[in-house]
Length: 167
Image (tube, rainbow, N blue to C red; front, side, top):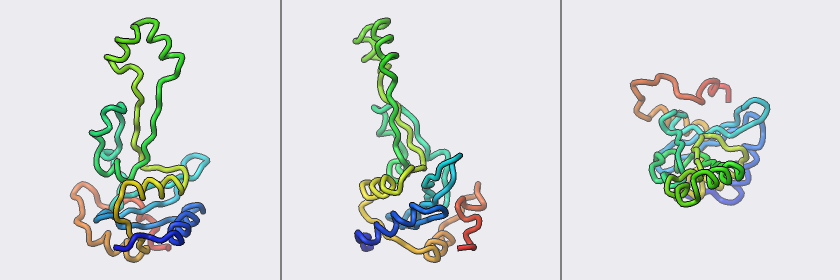
């Protein structure tokens, strides 16, 4: 597996910057489809792993529990962090004291792993950082590899393949 060149990354970035853009990857046995979708009034990059976006791969928890995140979420999903507002932190310290707030972890950041990226640059940077071997594949190779995957008994049609014959 050859790693993509800088020119290939630039082409992928431009493909994912247009409406209806898509890019396909093979990352150590995982088939990744990055597809531009509409979320209300903005375009996002949805990441389908082996043709699916599954709820069991989403993750939400405190920053100190980040090691409990599923493997798929760590490698392919966008991690967003939210800290409590400063006003609430000040109120809690006034009520409980600084020591009790630290013991209980009241002001720890909450992290959420979601399969959506806002920009192509952030998606590419995340993919490069968390996956040592990446192969860019075309749609026909992706479709053939997806058909070769063992189907799940609880699912019949993979997400992201609706209208795929139109490409």
